[in-house]
Length: 232
Image (tube, rainbow, N blue to C red):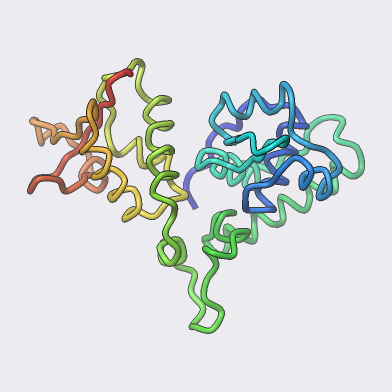
């Protein structure tokens, strides 16, 4: 499994919202959240998760619909890996985190991430031979290209100090672990056609690390290693 990052500083209701959206593995309305878990995602909690790029919320009719972003899935993966019971979690909270820790350990043994486990469209084909190849399981169901592009732009915004700065494709891909490499490549090629987006090779090849070389995108007959998106 990829290395675990430090968890963001979220409140218990915010973490709870991520967990419910993870278990649903699809967009859920506030009434659906209320029915599933007894609470909905509104106010400060919704704004925080939206601002952090962990949850995408849309107003549909009179109700909000929420779904995890690529970064939201990564935080859920890290939460399962850490699964540290928060202070004053109570008996039910303690039991929940015990289950999360066990689930995280089980996924780690199978080399799966939470999205592959909870999202039926990304599950392994039960009629075929069993496999623990996470990359094969992810590639079996293509992600929405618009979602991948949005995730790339979000990751770039976190890595770049300001719009137009160069960001290496290696650290960028590290933020996109829930997507298959082929999905990221396709989205990067599509982005490269857009105004204000630049993907270039590094002139000094000796400065490249092995990670840089592995993360390169073949574009225009050459390996490219860095991305810049101009501020709008």
